Length: 245
View (cartoon, rainbow, N blue to C red):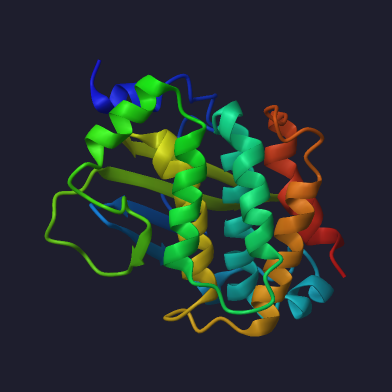
């Protein structure tokens, strides 16, 4: 079995939809290179229908674009919790809770290195050997963030799409990368960092709201050592967005 095959493992659960939307309301592309992950985020922004969740929620989120960014992260976090390896869920959830509870600036490179170490420790010996073989030339693994294209050959990509529907949002994930047991938990932190730090120029209010809702989402897991239901990962982000005040 290849190195990628070992690290993919029994990871996947059914995706939320078979077909992905041609015109999503938000799209995130993660490209994993040696040392770095490139994040690209796009949204139509001003075309967003701000009546869907009501004026109060929109005012709290300080604009439609910030609201879609918040929805994007909450749905990605929920989907990660749904499809991730059961051995990793509780470890990663507690690690990201500590990030969301931070009230001061974070050294993200160091934090992502800690996430990698925690994820690595959940692997079997065969999986650890495969990870060491994959990243032997690249220390550390792709724990740093970039928004620029790299000349290096990539390990692959994840493409996450969020689409507005009548009663909320639906999300989709296209996977085209090996070592998903490593890249998936890292991608959560990369998206959070991208949305809350330059060049996005996020406000403190946006970060505080995102932290509050992210912790609420993780706290709503009945048992973080077990996979949540499909209903939870599809609907819980929208429930939190509607009832936050």
